[in-house]
Length: 229
Ligand code: SAH
Image (cartoon, rainbow, N blue to C red):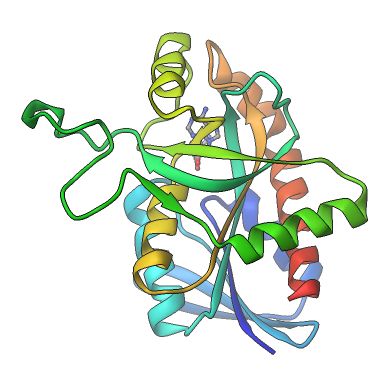
């Protein structure tokens, strides 16, 4: 029996889970809604943070400090950078960075501020559990690096720049901030993303077409993981 947080950024990423759980309680707090439910011996806390690093930081903190989550699983969609990642494919982040954290004017590398590392690692135990779950389900789970920033990337040049600096496999807008909160508060963190687009020209059209389906692929996977925890 564990208290597990399942966090997404958008309604599309969390409502599929609430539909499966059926019975849950809604708690309004800090300009957002948090949902608690029981699932397979665990107590779940679910929320969609709203988009971006600040919103996701707030929600991750609330889930841990107020709702006492003992592990956090992030579920959502991302833009693929690595050409081996196709729309619908699942990526588990081994580490994440903030590509838009920029004090390079002072000679620091992009993504670095004093006192922090450029990359924030996720929990190795949860990541290996995910690989076991994927094997059992007979689906391919990619592992790699995620670059997070407060921008929807739909531009080849921006994509290539971020990809080359951080060797990132995908980009999104919440993962690194959530991982940073979990690391600071010593809560195991898992960041899963299903690809909704390829972050190049016209990615916003792919996103609109694939977000619902990709979000469900990711959501179903984290729920399977809860069964193994
Ligand atoms: N269509 C939404 C906005 C989506 S922003 C609206 O109008 O409200 C994109 C969301 O999906 C973010 O939560 C981000 O984490 C993820 N994402 C998917 N593809 C992305 C990309 N190419 N660049 C950045 N974030 C992306």
